[in-house]
Length: 264
Image (cartoon, rainbow, N blue to C red; front, side, top):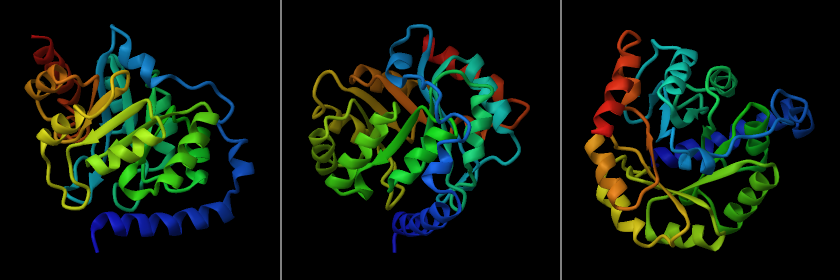
């Protein structure tokens, strides 16, 4: 069984338990559920922002522990000072070491849009995202049927959230175009093999209609790659592990150095 299949199976168990413990009605009384959300589309297009969605991720199935030493509030504050257009927060606990509380902590230091990055398969998780402070959710086309994708996308939009819809193949892009998604992310990492290929973003980008916001995700570790992808028409770039590999002592400096190289 592929790791992605294991994650989805575990996620279904988690959601069943959570729904019994804290029904949707209770989520509506939590934290940020009634709050206004920030627009990722607007943030990406704002000239003062760096078009990078920078991630907070403690570990992953492919790399084990990435960074357990630096707090999410310190990371969020650095990302805010660096003027990244958005922050991505992994909330899966079992495989990535994240939590919903991480969203709220990030919100205390980061004022631009925050993406809840998780394996969303049910409406309940979208209500969770809203309650704990997310502005954007991730929907992964490879794990959802077209009917599920359409249903979840509509729920998120109705709640005022924006949606980053992720693809990896032309077949998945065809599904996404049927729901008329505004923000399309192309994952350079195959979620079943974890192999990374930047060329995948470039090849698929040509198939995305004009007017859509295109995001290249994963496997981006240097400014030259971003410059290349920007020339190929990408609007933003999700960087997952590159910044998180830094130690607490040099985290802020490494983020600053990366942006300086990008501006040259």
